[in-house]
Length: 480
Image (cartoon, rainbow, N blue to C red; front, side):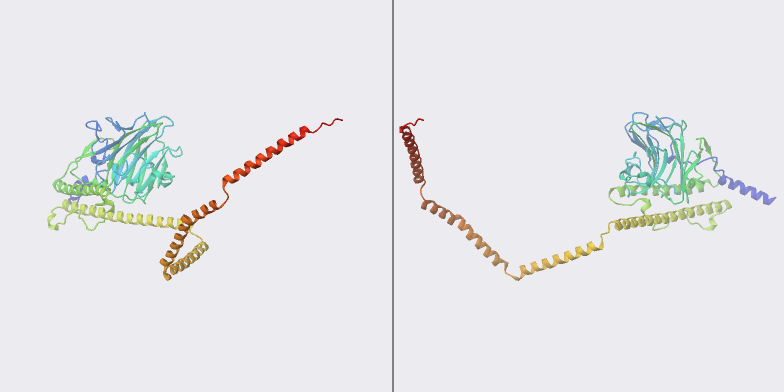
């Protein structure tokens, strides 16, 4: 009987910690939209989110946000979290709907990037944005006419807007018909310790253990419409994390269908409140430092982003305390739980760093292989190199010969003699040639004498012709 009573007491104490996770989901209100109705308290802004895009859009309604209108087309809008993500493991649930003509075109993108709306224009798609650092999940039917979800990763070094075949860079994809369904579509993105999974309407699109994203990034969604537009509406964006479980001072917990529950605190609430307050303060400092790092790295190259910093010291999440300070089993259990959770966090951080090192190594090896392939195709034949080296040797010899000529003789005397010869020729041209021409002209026959001779010859010819005509006319005529 005594054993049964002890087991019953232990069950009562542990019951709050093992409550079914299926009943309630602990969404973070700082990274969620549509946890309450209406979405916006004033109809102009969404709490903890920034809106960007064309004038008048996004348009906030009581139960949804219109990202792109049904007309006119060519609209681009986006929503971005104002704070950086403090969780290493998280799940994002996104509800959206796309409606339009049967041949309408539009795109919807889920973002998780290092600089948020500042890293890109805030409302672009991966096909048109400048280089960004993070994750992008794009749903559209513009590439080949197939409605698909495509997942892209970028470290900020690749410009997708100038790539000739962006869909070929996707690390995961699946077909998904999302337009004109009537009901909203549901996308769930789960980033866990050993898995990255994307689900669409309850079906797994793809899952991989090769993706590990750092915390300290910004969440966002963007939408774009073409000349034949799609109207894209956002019904909800909700973020949850297993790291939020056990925070007993969080009084309100949100259900999947937006029902609100409440958990009753036990006698250790004060201690848990203090521990949770310390955890929140630590997360706030990390988020502020990460945001400052993004700003400085974008400005003058100051503090790097959180995912680029090296962890040089260990920051304890649970303060050390003597064993005598724990009076009850509940306090011992709570301390053990907190230390195991802190150990899990640090192991996750270590694995994250190792994964980033492997990613960098893979990227470096890929770049080296690309360079080798490029060099292999552009290599010059050895025969041409030998001929070129021979010609260069001949040029070196000729240059050496010229250098010896210039250095072994008195170049100034040679130039002086050349100068004297040129001066003599110049003097001859200026003085001797005109005098010679004048002498030749003066010593030759005069022009007037030639003219008189020519006139006399012509007069003689005319006189002879007149004499001949008279003589002919004076002769007797002969008749037959």
